[in-house]
Image (cartoon, rainbow, N blue to C red; front, side, top):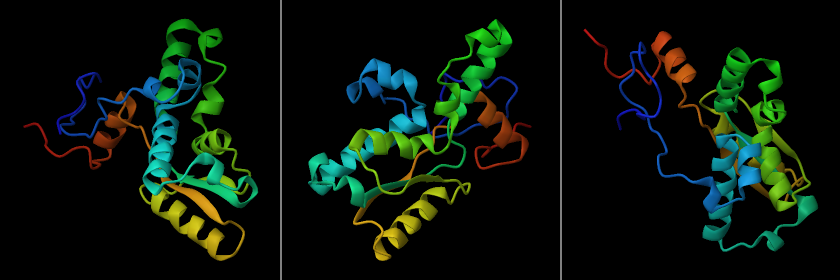
Amino acid sequence: RRVDDRVDLSGIDVRIGAPVLDFDPLEYMNRRRARRIDRAAQFALVATRLALIDAGLEPRDLEPERGGVIVGTGIGGLQTMEEAFAALIENGPRRVSPFFIPRLMPNAIAGEIAIEYGLRGPNFGVVSACASAAHAIGMAGELIRSGLLDCAVAGGSEAVLVRIAYAGFAQMGGNLQAERSA
């Protein structure tokens, strides 16, 4: 797919991306919650809800003490970082959101899922670049196999299609740069 035209890519040599264009977090959560969490956490919360539905499970089916959340992310709240940096530069430090740090932390994604579903077992983020989700799923399997958990929400979430990410990937010759301008 061509890149998202909502992102200013002037001066950045990028031609492709995979934007999620029709996602509206307000279909799944209230405005207050949506504003307090990064887009990567929004994706993860919705994916968790849909996975439970697909599995035929209700939140009440999950045993809080025996259920955990292990979610991988390569970067975490990059959209939050970009927004906070713009607020700081344009309007000064008092305009940086008080939710900046909690939204930015890579483990916030797993934490939001644990809060939503009342899961009090092991709950953490796995950060290992593009392998983060695979590592999180493997870790969840190990925790279940070891007997520490009976069930786990495991996977990955990312929301990095923002200007700074496009620029970074383009500069390092990363996978977002499929074509080069002459």
